[in-house]
Each structure stands twice: as C-alpha cells, then as structure tokens.
Length: 438
Image (cartoon, rainbow, N blue to C red):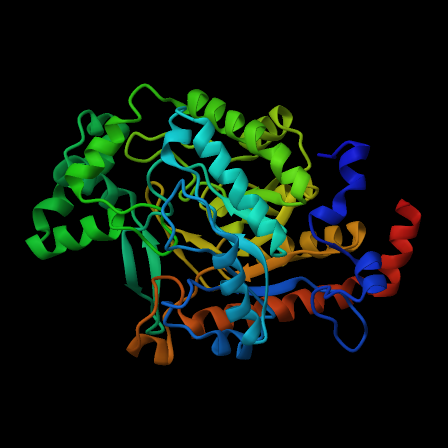
C-alpha cells in the first residue's frame, strides 16, 4: 500500500532519511567500512530493575534500547521529568533511546469506554515523550492479556530452552482451571479430549504453574491476574466482538493521531500474540486484511506498524516477506524472531532467529530493499531469545535472556550485511535512488 503524497512528504517523521541524516550529522543506523546504511540495532530493556545491564546490551552490539516507564499505571501521564531521567540513564551508558515500547492503552478504551481524561493523559504522555526526543511509540490493542505462552522453559535438543505455546494447554486451563462459561465451544473435539487428558495428568503444582504462566503477566504485559479476577475481566468484554473491538481501535486512533502528528511521533501497533482469538476475546491486528482495514479507516501518517515476525508468523497463512513489502510505508519498528509450527492445532515454539518458519532471509531481503528504496534506517530488535549457556544459571525475564538475544542480533546483523552486499546496495546507491524519487 502507498501513502498519499502528503504522507510521503512526512516520511522523515517515521524514521531517519539517509540524505537528511547525513546532512545533519545524525545517527543513521550502523555504517560499515563501505558506507552501507543498516538498520538501527536495539534491544529491549525493562528499566533499572532489569537484570540485564545496559553495559551488556551495548557490548552485545546494540546502539539503542527500547524501553518504557513500566512503573507508571495504565491511563496515567508519563511526566517529562521521569522521561528525561530515564533518557539520562540510557545515554550515560552510551546508548540511544528513540523508541518507546510500550505506552499502554487503557482497557476502558479497548472496551469502547474512552473518556476525555484518558485521551488527554495519552496525548500529554506523547507530548512529553516528543519533548525528550522520542519519535516512535509502540502500543497494542489486545484485550486484557499481552503476549501469551504456556511454557517458559521448554527444553530444546541442544540443552537450551525456549518459549512455547500449546493450544491444548490453553484449553486445559480455560475449560478445567479457569472454567470459563462456554469455553468448550472454542475448541475442537480433538483439542478438548487432549485438554481433558492433560488436566487429569497434571499435579496441583503443574496446574498452578500453567495458571501463573498464562495470566500472571509476562515481561511488558500491562496487567496481571489470578483466575477469579481474570474471569471478571473477561466478563467486562461481554458483547464485544471483533468488529466492535476494531471500531474501538479506530476511535482511539482518530482521537490520538492528530496529537501524534502535531508532535512528530509515529504510533506503531504491535500485532496480536498469538494472532487468533483466545479465552473468548477477539483479536483485530492479526492479518494483512486486518491492517488494510485499519489504515483505510485511519490514513494518518502517525498510524504506523511494529512488524513482529514472530507474532504474524504464528499464523501459517501470513506471508511475512509479502506483508513487509505491502506495508512498507507503515513500518517504523521491527521485532525479528521466528517461530516453528508444530503438529496439531495452533502449536508453536520460538526457534532460532534464522530458523523456524519465518523465512528470515526473505524477510530481511524485503527489509533491505525497502530501507534503501525509501532511504531510511528502521529501528529493529532481536525479539526474544533462547536461554542458553550461562543464561541457564542466572535470572532474566522470560524471553529476554542476554546471550540468546545477543546470538540473534549477531545472526540478524550478519544476514543484513550479507544481503546488502549481495544486492549491491550501499549509501551512494541509496542516495541516487532518493534523487530519482525526488
């Protein structure tokens, strides 16, 4: 898809134009000895409480972190002073911060109960972030739960561990532990039978672990529940189907995109994880068709996309390289990881960054081509990572081990550089292409 001419004229608000950045002396990704312009390499950091030190992130090769003020409750304003303090901490470690992940959307907005106070708070946070140099703000529109897994330490053949999602385990929790009314109708007969067997074989400790894994809140999650509270929260979405949730999403964007445009911020929506309905809750950012509807309804240049290859890739019907090209004008942040589909319904685990079913080489070729054609360096991070080697013996947030992500970043960095040289793309060629576009 293409933005109107007015949108293309503002492409510098989305990321860094090569020509402009060179002229202004701004950082523009990583440049090697040949002058090739590459993506801006970042890692996620959960703030001062993160067991991974900023110095380790820098040593891994990242030049930026993506982070958020996780301590501020949803719906409250992020004070400029707190943003400035966090920036100072990051910069003192020799890293940059241009992308927030995430500025949460209050569940009242997702339920269609948007108030002037909630919009004002979100807008004030955007203004304060822009005043401190932030240019990209990530959010999601998933009801209640952020990303969901059923196993946080699934053993791999090489001794490392990975995150895993098993549909029968979700059903075992939903039907037999949560006991959500009508839950059985959401699962096939085969999955219901597997869930019953799974539940019967589980010890009380295993049942408790599954409950906590699913609903206690994973890193970056906006809420944490116990089962009774989760049931009540699900009931608050009664009567809200996918079309109503989409309507609420569009209403939110129409309210806040003018503010984002005014201050030069792009709002990038993170896709649903997993990309299908779960616990009777709808999902509306799961496919290319979902994105088409979103951008047709809100064509603002501030309405962007965080392209997560792992989230979109959990659906075999999502063609990732094609989607990167189709929504190139909207993408301002990449989460690069791969999932491996397993036998059975909706089962997957997180594979090596260049393995699994993401077709990462083709995805990266699409990224390289659009980056050079549009003359911009896009922020990326290696999303998640296996627990491996020394990571197995130290504390880290699930999915956010140091060595697993460092391995992923190294592999992705090498893949990108290799494709740039394979295609004969470099900064001079990109500048010439920009002249042709102009």
